[in-house]
Image (cartoon, rainbow, N blue to C red; front, side, top):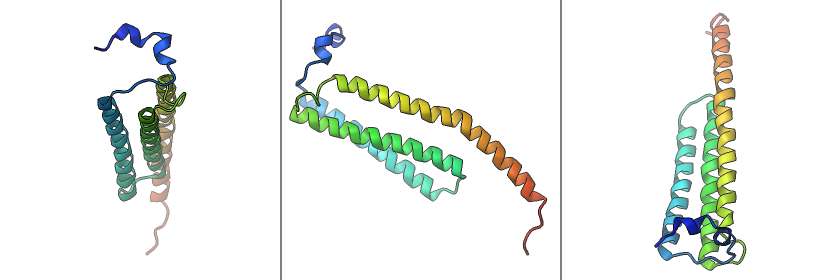
Length: 136
């Protein structure tokens, strides 16, 4: 049975060759594949849908996030399965989680700051184009 107190001990995280149950390996593979499939779906959606450049960049950033961490998840799962010393240690999960949160925060900042500015600029540009003579 899983002991939550043991989960937070330094010895648990710093074990260099941890044993991983086969069911955990299957869950990790499934999570990595799902992340990669989401990345592919976002790229396909962004390429087929006509959208402005700032929104396309947002979709590209999100798809890159999913693809990167899906690939890292699958690679780390393989390292855990092979019980590679040091590279399959549990502390890498904390490092990957912190990196994922930092990158997601950067994407969130882009969505909150740059996207509204770009929308406003696109609206003013549309207003400007409305009064220009059109080609016949």
